Image 1: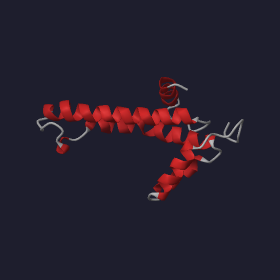
Image 2: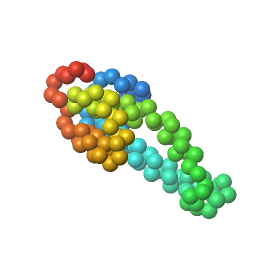
Image 3: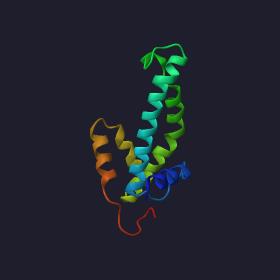
Length: 124
């Protein structure tokens, strides 16, 4: 799956928590989100902050574009993570293990890099 196909697929399944997401779909979307927020940080720091009367990259200027993007991408992020867990034959409820400090993140990261189950599983 290519970068654009992955982003298009995730955004077209905006709040779809059923089915599976292959590794490339998940990781390309993570890369898209990282690049998007990097670009937004530069725009907010170099353009928006001075327009609002703050100095360039002033931390007190706020990040309104990043806030809007975060809210808009919240459901697709959760949905693709749940579908990725489905691909390795785990329930989406395992996503809640991320609330356990450090260990939860490491467990989820390990699962996200695992290859999906071959053939069909209980999630598709």
